[in-house]
Image (cartoon, rainbow, N blue to C red):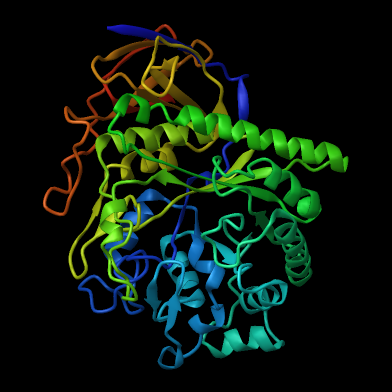
Length: 504
């Protein structure tokens, strides 16, 4: 058995974990909305058509913020189509996903749903086919109390109180040639600046996310961020990052190492942001919003077979495996490693579309394998992110060299006395013995050791077997004299929780 070690010290602080690090995303694509969070006529539907079984699972995840309505969809979206009397709403061709959008569900319905699940709204504005004036109208509709045309229109639609949406995305992936109304960096930077000015004039309390590159592999990566921030730095609060990973070559050893790329990506974007800060001679440090991240590749072939111009087709419905859950766990660890700069993140998406939650139309809802690391992080990963000093044996794969078997993040919540170690063993064949020096945390005991593993890396949860892969509390850990000894099973996600002993 390989052996690894880590040292955890209260003084090795990375930064406070913003609860919004555990956000998610609902886009008008596939069955994310229709048949996902909203399905009137379903046995579990409430009076507003929201699926209560889905609502319960979302609340189980304790999702703090949800990005809406896109995604690629937003760059052709006319938000006015989705408000007002349902009978008068227009059906539109959604060019982003070659589907028909009924607009039965829109801004007000989403804000009402978010309140029911206990989440804030992160709203995106259309900077593809539209611009600053339309964004100004939308924020007035959503956030202004009343006495103006757009705010009074909201009130006439049955929403007397403003939605008070505090976080707004200035478009989506505007560097992408696939994007409706895609732009050069200069075109987008100028548009984002002017949009930001108008929106903050309407509501100075909001925070704004400007689009970074759609992915690290974009030919303009780095240059795009520098140019856009050159225009909009003073008016925006966050720069976005997006990343998806897959295992198309069926090389699991390389797949579970892909977050080494994610770490480099984050560091590169931070470097560009700090360069822009230096050029501006600004006192403001640009924070990051990693508002799309996940595993995505299973559904590619099935999506090519879908008929165009249908309503809510089953698009991008990846059915996730254990190894996918391990990668999702590693991605969460990557986010926690830079909690000092990444304040928001959204797993994309929440229901049915590359999602932790799956549903059957008219039927049940169930948890995918990736549900569990996401849930564990959201529940137990709140507090301060600490930097563990890790020593781990390494391996080489077809795509990477010097990959550590042990990947780990540590979160400490001083008020409650909770210490949580998130740990992944990437080894496909053997368990990993880890010794952790926790002598800074005298008077602690182990509260639990959750493990997500399975003999089959390709094991998955389905409607027929919804609990095929699920965490168990049988982890092997012991704590003596400030030293934790734990065994991480092969290819496993582990959550080791420690709590301060209460003396009465």
